Structures are given as structure tokens and as C-alpha cells.
Length: 310
Image (cartoon, rainbow, N blue to C red):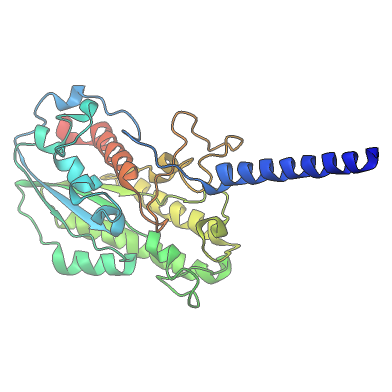
């Protein structure tokens, strides 16, 4: 009667393997913990312990839902608002680290609109961004291009401003147009601040952590998606490089390891100290911790590059 025992043992073993495989899959491929507490790089307090300038400074937010703060727990937790002043529940290490602390004559306006594309942003600049007098120095923070890529989630045929599903060949003329449009936007913004301005421009993050497997985001497969995304980022980096008053904010690099593969320790993008998901439930916007990280990289970029600190 040994045969039934062996068969039972085999069935049990197979069952255990299947259970272990299911647990492994759920833990490393499905579960995406958000985590708690601060997120992103350290911002040194030293430069925020003194006034940078008494000059009138105008902070402008331009772009899409990332700058609008969609997905944050509250509007006070958007990166834009957190840059200006600390919310009531600020983390201890970030207390008094804000632009209002170091710029006593700071004013601000957020012109960003959720769901907007770069085609909308150039219209916003033309129609809503006024020309300031020479006494005002401009600080402009900007996220653009992300919606050009991800809209309309494969539900319609790809087109300029909504190119999801396009091949690289189809997207090439739209990418070329984006280059012209972005350079025009940067020139127009600069011209509106005759007293000088600095533009802090984000590249575009990748919720797939460089894998390009859009089904992991519950979106249709897009074989050329990663290549199109990379070409858009190339344009953003090129445009930033040729404008002396434009500084690249590394959103793409900062968010690697915090997308759909955040728990997969075998990947190069794995972040051992914080293997958590920084995206909102719609996968195209940050969650609250993601916005904390964005606030930090903007502040670090300003500290590193701004002539206001001279």
C-alpha cells in the first residue's frame, strides 16, 4: 500500500509548490506597499537657515496633474504647496525648509491643469502668463509631456498629444513637434521675466521601472512604449541643456524602483531602503509619498542651481 502514500506525498508536495509560487507572485508582482513616513532624498537644512534674497520672487507652476497635485492626500501635500510652506503635519527633518522661509517677498500662482498635455501648456503660457516688471525674478516649476505619452490609454488610435500605442515611426513627427513646442515654451517663459528667471523642468517618470510591461499597470500592451517614452525624455533633457536658465529636475531617476516592480529585489532599480510604490491608484500620478519626494528634488535642484543663493 506504499503507492497511495507516495501519490499523496506527491500531491501534497505539488500543492505546497503551487502555494509557494502563488505567495511569491502575489508578494513580488502584485502587492505594492505604499509605506509610511518621508520619501525621497535628504534636503540639507543649512541653506534654509538664512534669507536668500529680499527681491520680489514670483513662483509659477506650469503643466499637468503632477504639478496640480492630483493624487496627494490634500492640496497642502502637493509638491507645489509643500515647496512654498510646510503643512501642519510636516516631518520633523523638513520643518522650516521651504521657499517662504528664505524668500520673504515670495508670491506664487499654480497654472497647471490635470489632464493637460504639452499642446495645452503652450496655450496657457500664451494666454495666462503675463509679463512681469524687471523688479520681479521668476521661479518656474514645470511638468509637461507625460500625458502626451499615456493618453488615451490605448482606447483610441494614437495621435499627437495622445500617442499611447504608437510605434516609434508613428511617433517620430510628434516627438519632433514636441521638441519645437518645448523650446518655444521655454523661450516664451523667459521673455515674460525681463528681470530674470529660472525654469525647473522635470523629465518624465516610468511607472514600469524601465521594464516597459504596461500590462503590469493594467493597461494594454505597448511594444514601443518604452522607446517613445525615452525619446520624449531625450527631448526634455536636450531642451534643458541648451537654455542656460533651465535646469533639469530628475523625476525619472528619483522614481525608479518605486513603480510596478518596487518589491523585486533582483532588479537593478530595486531600492532596498524603501521598496515602496510612489504612484497613485491611477498609476500616472504620484501618491502622497511620491509628492514628498518630488518636493525634495525640486528644492535640491533650486539650492544647487539658483543664483538667488549667491
